[in-house]
Image 1: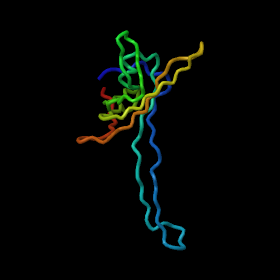
Image 2 (image 1 turned 45 degrees about the vertical axis):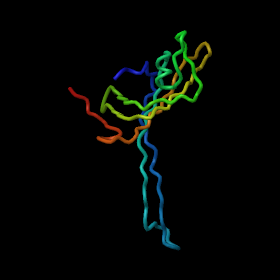
Image 3 (image 1 turned 135 degrees about the vertical axis):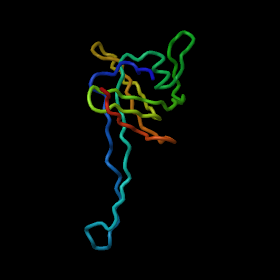
Image 4 (image 1 turned 30 degrees about the vertical axis):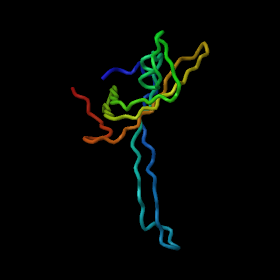
Length: 138
């Protein structure tokens, strides 16, 4: 695995949306007879700063042109990738098949910075788990 650029301070988060709930009631009753939940997978979000051309091609899409610049049409497909989040404390996280939505979020002012915002959604895998929290060793 290769490091994805420089993670911008305080942007890396894993969050899980609340489950979709369907309730079924008997006529005239306030309490549901059946309550079904469809849980959501946690998503990883973070931003990288000062992305280079290769990062843009790999994660936003597009291609590296002959003059070493980045070319983009918006119709390019970005392949799923394995992602590992190495934390300072607690669990590290592995996403073996991550769907990556990376978008440019650049503030071009004199105080601004060029960021690429990532949303990584764990996708199903044929073996193992879509998201795994791994205890730190040592």
